[in-house]
Image (cartoon, rainbow, N blue to C red; front, top):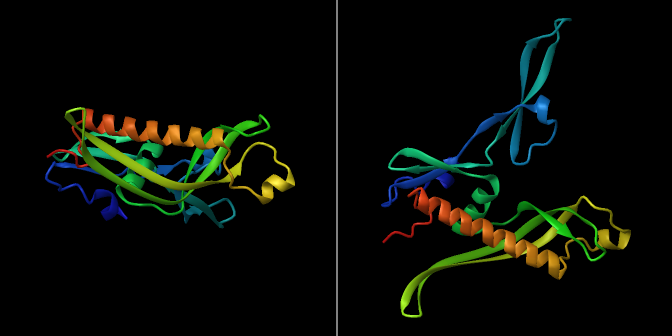
Length: 194
């Protein structure tokens, strides 16, 4: 897994990235661990001499950015997700989106990315060269936190035009801001330097 994240570390641009793995405090956050994995460990003896099982949870949602072997920045969970999807086509990834349905109910929706493809190319427009990125994703709603009728639950996965437009805007803005952030940090993880 670390190889997938750090494969560009020794690229000609001297830039790299890898996951920031950290232990999550399960007592404060309860079961709210988005992209975390859990192990159970024995934490010694309790009052009656019995061993108590305490889960140890690790989170690798964010990514660290490197330039010339030095840490220069960090990507948030969604920035890391969309960058990873852009660089390596993804199947079965998820992100959360604030949406409004056709009935005016608003809340969060868990969006499932079923398939994706991407490309980055140099194009000539208006007499100058521009770098254009394209990301195509097949998405559907996996879950929402607002009320739904039984017929809607049976057909969950359909995104109305507003939701689809919001998802496209969110992904585009996140990916573009990630590109600008890495460019400003001189961490060329998109490999655009020639």
